[in-house]
Image 1: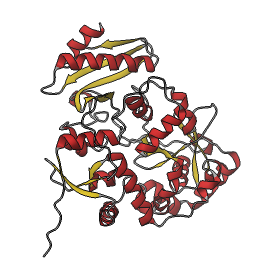
Image 2 (image 1 turned 60 degrees about the horizontal axis):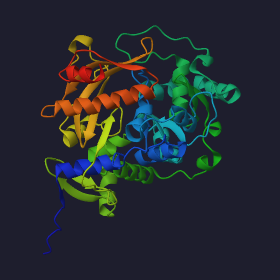
Image 3 (image 1 turned 135 degrees about the vertical axis):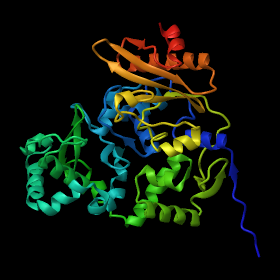
Image 4 (image 1 turned 90 degrees about the vertical axis):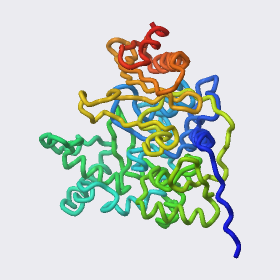
Length: 409
């Protein structure tokens, strides 16, 4: 009887460096503002940028590029994403990839299985409207074809009264548009002030992409797991499945297939109870010197269980937590220094005061607070300048606030 080969073992520190490198933190930030091509290459490396409507500090999709590349011209990201009113050089397109997301336009066909499975993949109101009001969906598509790009308000539908406990208060016209968007018949032509403008998919996605044969669902999901594995470096099966929000059964099956074909390598990571899988071409740096503020929606940390496993960092966004029950604040960003998450700061961009407000600053246990404060102060000044704010203002909340205030003034 031949013994099965031993599964390679990784230290937690090694796994952390592999993950950081895969997420784009292994190289120094460029000395000059990156080009649109360099920004697009980063999105291709990550596979996805999550969108989010909260704008208390900065739009979520802008921050991952800043975290990795430093100050850049946000108009360049707008241009390749089709946002704003300026010139468009579309290289990214919106779809429900992780959540609402920007993805490289070439990946759009990989989500046709999700578009076709709206009843199981979409939330109830989106799937239900096509059954209950098919004529409304058809009329909305005709309106988009005739008038697009259109806003949701252009459907003429009236917003219903708000309901306590409901995050979105969509009228029927918006729901119909979202059904059409989910099923791939319309796309996001652009966003203006973050409001989505809808147009027919033929006017959003290039004909060459639309002409790509529809892959079998299993093949598409397998490719999405490959992209996730490359972007994560080393990961558990739930990590891989969560990256593009695959159904759990599909995630398990696709990961098993990639292991069987040798495209994913089983490994053991010290301290992890679940099996892990290594992307064979993942970089394995011996050390990293990263420094970055991380959006709550950054792909490095968006799966909170993985964040705890990798960094021993318990993180929950408290936007929807009542103010009196918040531990750290409304919009808290972890601070990455070297290979570790060393602090967290509650940030707000106050345009009236022309200031970046640090409403709370908290160090992790065991860190050198003086060193962390110096590095964090430098990063806060850098991000404030990038956002066009003249100063950083420190509130006296949190154990790191005093040291920050002494540096920044």
